[in-house]
Length: 367
Ligand SMILES: *Cc1c(COP(=O)(O)O)cnc(C)c1O
Image 1 (cartoon, helix red, strand yellow):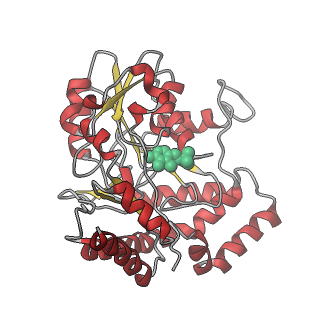
Image 2 (tube, helix red, strand yellow):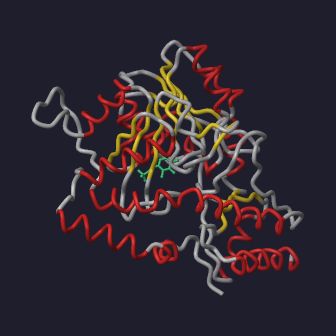
């Protein structure tokens, strides 16, 4: 049995007629860039989260950049973020003129270690970007308390965590702004690149919408960038959005089955969810000291796995200029050689989960 890492086509088949209709409607109306479908999705997405504004844009990386520009980041300003994320989180800090300041991650949740944030704050620190990595909320209660105390802004990178919560409050509703990716494989995925930022701040929303569309249509009140959502993606996202709660529950069902079946198998540590938080399992990431051998065994058996990510951000060549050593971020560094992402997607059948687990058990039995 071949097991893919994700199966986007399986999801398409469950909503095929509505998607095909939506795509045909956009084409019939030539509503390709912005237009009514984009406005409709922006309204629906903001409503689904209970926030005032959604500003759509070309992708989740652009959303982070636009939000930081909107918050007025200046050359030399410092932004504190996690050592473990996709590089979008930090490349945009540099692009916006800022300086990246890394924090190590928490041993249990893979999210920023909030105990280390205050020690990294300097007079030049302007903001914090927590990442709800893999689908679990960072400790937003603690992060917002630190931000209030030191007068810092917070941008939540929610690219992997649509509808995840802490103490019943959804990610994306805590900070000054929050950014989402609708990359096809994300929990809410378009059929191409797409992204958005959400905020309750009227002025920030206006500024970001203007900036993302060449600094204004008709009257260019400033120079901007071109970062627009297209009508096809918006119409597809509007079809998919009502299914997101059920798809999230389906991911949690897959994770719960893995949790149960993998308990006590070899040296595997299954994902831990902190008290008061929920996990929406964009990724299901286990830890084992025998990661590379296990991964080879699974690959040979036709089971796809991924490393998210092979290195912590400070240890990529892109950040060599910061001169960091493994001892600066011991948890993120140790995770490099022990994390392994197993296949997970809402439509994944139980038999496939069971087959992945049986193959893992065979690895430990043989060894
Ligand atoms: C996917 C992702 C992004 C960027 O999203 P794109 O839409 O691919 O630009 C940003 N941050 C994290 C943590 C992501 O996983």
